[in-house]
Image 1 (cartoon, rainbow, N blue to C red):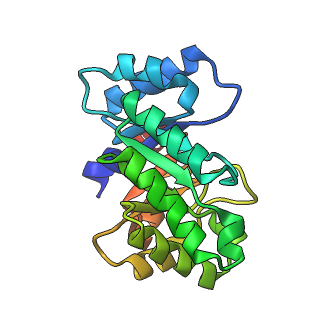
Image 2: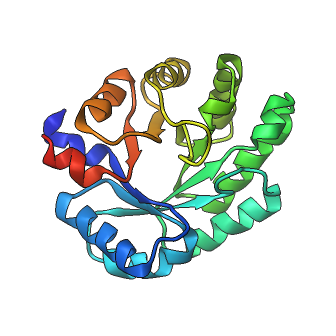
Length: 216
């Protein structure tokens, strides 16, 4: 696991005050450490795409971030624009209110719309576990699979809390061994990163990728 730890990491910078020099640094670190991807706000996609050109690092950006309360049409347009901008992966936030209202048709259609607009790019569905019951987490995972997404993801990192071992293990149990599970939010050291992988995470969203790698 330690030998391939870098390939679990989405090196992430989503804070709204991030400046261009920080984005360039993030991209360069991702190239240096051969992280799986960089994950950034849509406003920096053009610049990051140019910087990463010729590397093996994937470019990931976000849709409906961080609340998930945008309209489905807006999310679909965001996904289409990002796809045309050169992203390889999209992390979208689920319609949390619709899920908690048990409007599963609306939730599924919301995800499907982004998946279709992003095709053939990978879509990871952020379910914001800290706002959900275990029953709702299970429903969110099943709806994400049914809608054609490739991953479920724990958190935006902008809500009450981030990833937990319990949630990652629960999500892995629901989706089975072959579907993606991304743990994100609060993963700042090697011990936590390894624990998340042990619990079932196949990808880690973290701004502490370099610190984690240097701790090996």
